[in-house]
Image (cartoon, rainbow, N blue to C red; front, top):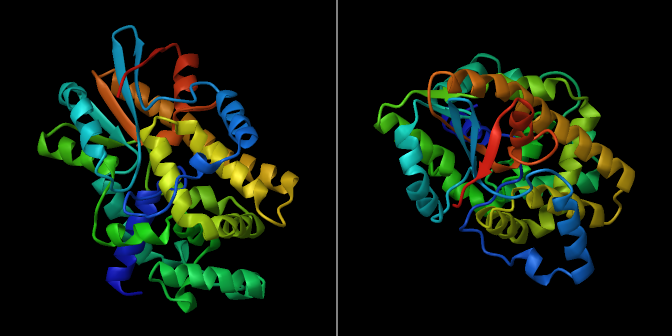
Length: 335
């Protein structure tokens, strides 16, 4: 695999950070929420409000002398990040440690791992995606990958979990990614490096591989099918998710994705709910629980800023509730 393509793919994987489907401000589309019927909108809000801490991107957690500022991020480039960075710069300046999902060391380690063992991302034994998907499914996937600048013959050999991650990047967001544009996470990392503030990762680069290695092939193919169901609305979906993020609606993003998937033709509601439960467990809950000791250890050394995908904040097993259960007092801050 050419190094430039490998670099682009690894960067895509890091940008996704497994948190949620993402978007970029350059995508041109309409906000789905604006045209949503009243009953559907109420159902969406009700589902959003059913979990703890459904809104807010900036929080302060305190326990005794320990102080942690938690910043929910959006992983791709958007000009609105400049205002956010200006708001949190005083917090970053005071931090003894800055925590992110994946930093430069993790990116380098991932690149090295992929070069050393291509089977982490490429199917080396067994049926390819072309052989595993139906003809209509493959045709949809091939077109979606062409729009993202990736040849279908190559994508056919990718592991399905990775293809589902690529599908969660809309085609309109790939150009900025290829140009190396980063989101709020990248801006926080740049600040830490520029000002020589210790920067640590919340998890190892191996986390992504372990997560999906534990999933069955059928579960991974199910992720592709779910992503393909939303593909016709990708541009509108991208704009909607970006706007929801900057409105501080961190949980609404997840509930909207669930609602849209359920409304797609041919979807089995029971299967959709089961798939979402498995994804939430693997992509959020398990990782959130593993992050808490890392946050606590950093907080024992002084003030901390922890910046990670906004979808990790809300929910019964979100980082905010887990910190609350660990004895921290939480305060939502204006952003």
